[in-house]
Length: 99
Image (cartoon, rainbow, N blue to C red; front, side):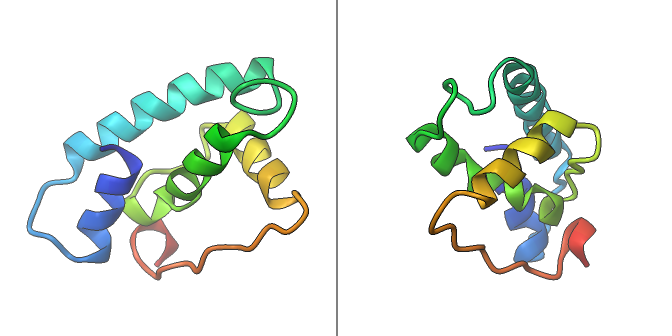
């Protein structure tokens, strides 16, 4: 309901104010940032389904006007996910902060 909702507003040009979705995204990212300061992945020392499930929403958050600049631990986590064997990147959409 946060990063994905904010992205959908931008991607499909919905006539909806994304402010609430952006606020929810920032709250979620704040929690993730705290956890990722303690461990390299969301549930510990190795990537789990939790990391893979959250990656897509977080990696494309800038497309929903949600900046990842305030979150250095999240940016490092994204890089760790992208360095996993067999990683296949998502296509970027030219919307939001990515436009």
